[in-house]
Length: 276
Image (cartoon, rainbow, N blue to C red; front, side):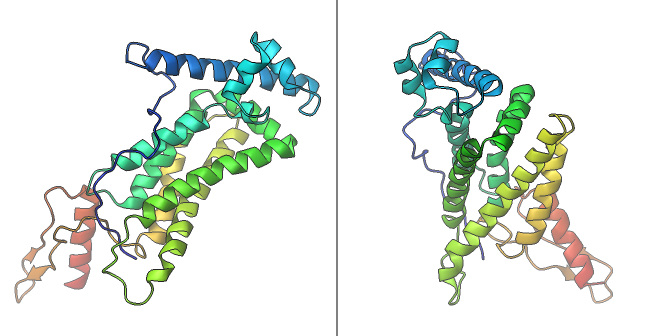
């Protein structure tokens, strides 16, 4: 499986990517910030009621009243009370897609996907106390757990489409039909690695260096899938084979000037092995 460079395209979503701290001075930023603030207030009210009254006993009217808004305001932001427990996923999905669309040409597609899903971890890490409480609640309420699984599936579909869009159609023999399978498995591996680290972090009360844990998990995914899916998507010249003198006194390798340092080091290490 190989990937090639694909020119970045605008996000398919018509919505403007928003971040939790959207500046109100930016055109449209104030409305986005107010929308997110209201969604979070409704989510906080829902969380408190679910914890005190129980999920099944809590109504939408009670959530709206606790947040100081009308029932119709609640339904402008959420379709159901279980959606209110995950107020940030829509915006986070947009930010993850923006990461994919802005990926540099030299970056391996798997690395891009790993950076994309880090937006999800940033969402949880921004409010550890709420994230931990929500984790405990979803463990107790099957309906909320199902809603969470549906949210995870949206990220997997996004990353699968992205990986599949970077296959080199000329690099296959007769296995091109395996592309959808390989893209889905690789995307699932990245999401699974992320969720494993996330759950461990939440069980620890939101404590620990989650960034380092994520990088370690992604390194395992890259080691497992990196060889199979190719060294990158750049269609420019690959590092040239190593050349050495007859006595092995000099070793020469060639790499792109924009190649990441780790890629250059791998090229050198491989050349040394071949000519040792």
